[in-house]
Image 1 (cartoon, rainbow, N blue to C red):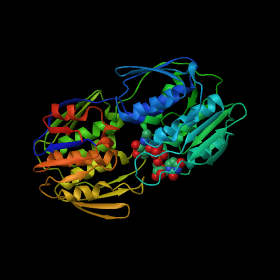
Image 2: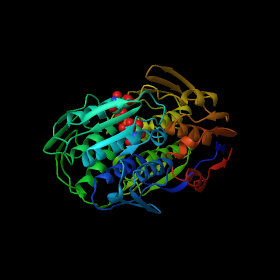
Image 3: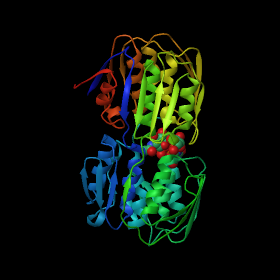
Image 4: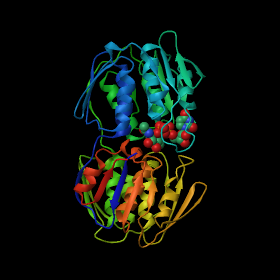
Length: 419
Ligand code: UD1
């Protein structure tokens, strides 16, 4: 398993180009299954999760070509609606093929997902939504089997809690249903909005995009289109956190400040100078030590759970004490014991973590446990005294494109060691 060796203590400075969002690219790729003619996606990041989904869709007989950050999907050769355990287990987002397959081919067999081990993360709400649209859904031997005789039927779907993937599956199923579907308590994450915009470009009729009530008037067919994936707001926030963590100054380009307002506000509270333009964000820590901040993770537009670990890392070296409350996932503090090995002072009680900032972290051997947790360890290592070895970095390769190259360009000392 590959490891990172990071020599800490250098302020990071410079410019970094942000990639397309993993969490947008995955639902968009799954939604290409709805189109009768080829779809071309641009700004697709080169990540493990993206290649896993491409492999999964290719396994259904679909023709997919990839040229740099452009991916073209032609579903005319599809010959199976089966998503096997071997691929689905590595990535929870594989469940996103369920809605499109069911809507267009009226039958799908998809393994129950795996993915990051951050809580039990069931898919019950996805399945309830498919049932509401008239599908017969059974779960047997670890597989979801959903089918419908003819088209799905428009209906009212009321999500009891905000689910990003559940909303995306409901949306991609409803667009080809007969009649109107109303999705209540829909997720408003930018990646849901991005999906809705692409579906509209394919010919779908959706009202309320960006709000928590989506109204979908089903159409009989959707066409291919060309569509660019939005910028990765979590990658953006992670690089800005690297500047806050090391007292540096980083400009993220090819990004969108409107996607991460709640995060930028926290950086400002930390004492960073944040400036933005139409497609860039710059964070200047001016060599200062950050001030500790309190925050609570909540659905968009509030503070995102996918930035919790990174901001906790900044809090570990901040002046003062910061209280963090994680409300989205039940087991998302797996980075805490690892950060503690590096000298961080963190107390966890249920959903609450209290971080008392220390002046200096120390290098230590640590282990990545999930995607965003691994980024918090990279951040801690960048600020720590000495050389940190981070094991199991396959987690980070799922979501951060060319991370060593990008960090090196910013002045970090980071090395990948194959093992
Ligand atoms: C997506 C993101 C992930 C992010 C999360 C929350 C992708 C590929 N992943 O994950 O990075 O951390 O949104 O912003 O976009 N839940 C249920 N039943 C369900 C579905 C969800 O109980 O059927 C619960 C989950 O366990 C969790 C909460 O709802 O506690 C939110 O999960 P959800 O928004 O669905 O997350 P994902 O779509 O899996």
